[in-house]
Image (tube, rainbow, N blue to C red; front, side, top):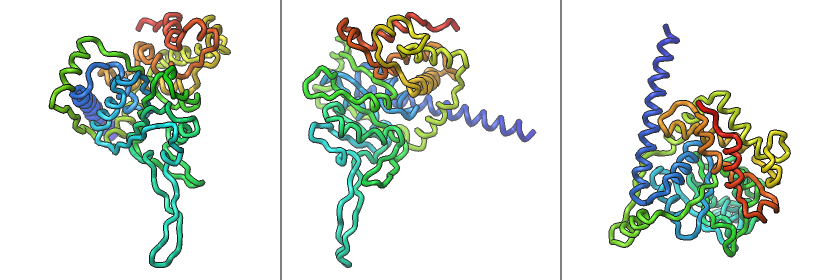
Length: 341
């Protein structure tokens, strides 16, 4: 009897947590929509990143509202927000913080005091991250993977939750430095912002060229977000669906026997195991956001490109034929379509 009662309580609590998750999701979208026009797919991917606890890289041309999107989402979360404008002269200590010598006025003794950098926040906007050299870009590596940083041999934990929402311009633009593969692999998504449609651009003009200024209000807090991240990990995934995800990721590796001929022809390096982990986690969050309590093949297929586009490295032949990683991944989905449920 006791175990049955406990199960009932647990089930009721779980239903309440799911209902709150979906309520907060709707409220975040509602608040963001007050400021941001269009970009539904981008918004969904950034929200998946928040609910998973992953970092997002947002790629787009100047003027496509990358920074505004990140600031608006941060406003809705009720978390501590910091921004770093990445420039060619930015140093690693400008990101992590550094030790300074302070003198005690009473004793005259000098001691080292750590001054935290902007990385000590819940939401870090790394604006135009690819406009700073690799030395400074690498200052984020430990923070993104281990939620901590090391300064002068001392280890410091970062606040929880911790998200890096980074924006970058396409690498073809002047003054950009390609991100190292090790850092790219730490991003859950590489989300691409494209131009708006005509109607959406007309809406932007109507909102931004008047005296009225739209703002977003906070709808949640740090404790709830940590609870949502735990809830997402509880979403079940069938073995057949998980196997489909693993087979897709393994097929991006040209050295794998299962890789199709076009992957062996155009790909130098495929996605890592971290890519598989992120694909499954993101699919769990997407399922819950779509009011489903299990992961489907559709979730895997829908998220493959944004999760994998920055994890596969193409060779010179692909570049000479003007093929992108998106082209390869689309062919991969055609080669191995999702089984019918």
